[in-house]
Amino acid sequence: MTVVTRFAPSPTGFLHLGHAHSALAGWRRAREAGGRFLLRIEDIDQTRCRPVFEDAILEDLAWLGLDWDGPVRRQSEHWDDYRAALAVLEGQGLIYPCFCTRREIQAEIAAMQSAPHGSAPHGPADTPDGSPLYPGTCRRLSPRERADRLAEGRAYALRLDMAEAMRRAGRLSWADELAGEQVARPERLGDVVLARKETPTSYHLAVTVDDEIQGVTTVTRGLDLFEATHVHRLLQALLGYRVPVWRHHALLTDAAGRRLAKRSDAAAIRAFRAEGRSAAEVRALAGFPD
Image 1 (cartoon, one colour):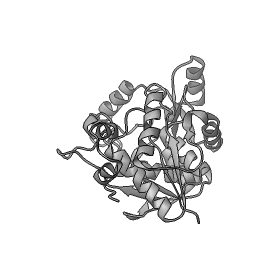
Image 2 (cartoon, one colour):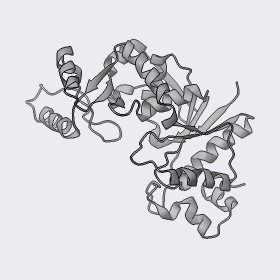
Image 3 (cartoon, helix red, strand yellow):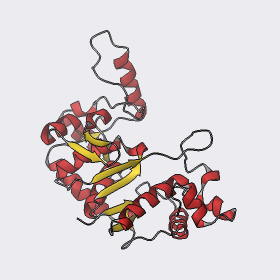
Image 4 (tube, helix red, strand yellow):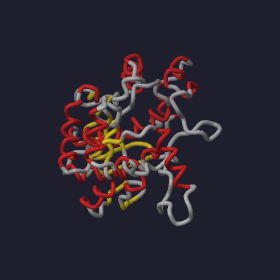
């Protein structure tokens, strides 16, 4: 099987050393195997994505010496692909509209946590990243209540009925080249959002659909996305997709031990270029010496 990897940045800021590490990891993995390396621009967040950042991504990658195969895939140009996948899940009865605001979700969780002993639901109150676990409020709405709220034109998110989805999919696992075989536990993230009223996809759905369409065989990305893989494996099973291998690499940190972020200008590839550093030096700083 031909190895196909990808680098999929969001154009919401300039690339830093952590991005360079991830891009180089995928690029070398493909090139050493005689495979293909793809570039994808994940620009579904139209409020934060900017053309200037996309231009900078292409420029910085080329400066680092990376090349990619085929045209760049931009998520904003493929809404119909995500709508089609969402329709499959809706056809299975696994999607429901959620009208809750963040404040309402937090209020319900607080009420549940302060309920008398024994009446609160079992299980963790937060997802692995620390965000509140959705309590399933709108999952319990009647068809009439949902129809009425939709008719009112209220904003909504489309959530995956996690319990039902897991019942349909059964026991799942996935392989990580560094961490080994993993049992999928998507329930840890609860009823995840797969789309919104104005946007026909979320990160979870888009990345799963894109990897299938592009034939990605090895997903190289940072450990910060490890937990999301549990959901992506479930979506692959529900949609009948092929299952890639994952390789979640360690994250680069600054001198204080903090994870590099786009707001960390000192670690930006552009900053190193402005200092007169060579591409070879920056590749070495990113963990890939020549």
